[in-house]
Picture 1 (cartoon, rainbow, N blue to C red):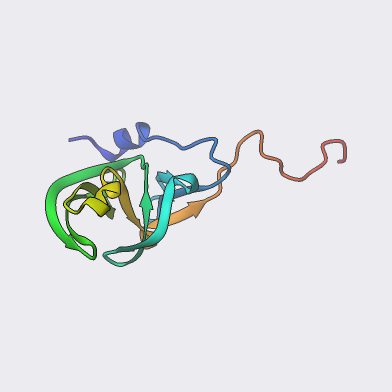
Picture 2 (tube, rainbow, N blue to C red):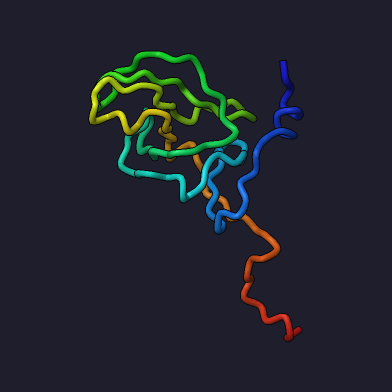
Length: 132
């Protein structure tokens, strides 16, 4: 079994994302970006959720049939790779044709995320370099 230190050494870090990174609310591991959020009009198990096109640093659980608000879908829970907190689920298959756009995408619960500001060397901090 891989220990936590090994997992942290191999986690992906989102860069060049204009300071808009969403992290696991529990351990602050990078999960997704603002640009990857496709819709904020979704419902998770514990409140509002985001439909997201791409995530990193998650593990995908066992697939199961689940009755959701829009019908029966084949989904698998997703968890943070570092702390194992459940974050939401991945849509694997939708039975209804109008729901097919969800396949391969993720629901990430808003309450499970934290917005983080990312600093880089090219960030403009507003200070004039000629003035000390």
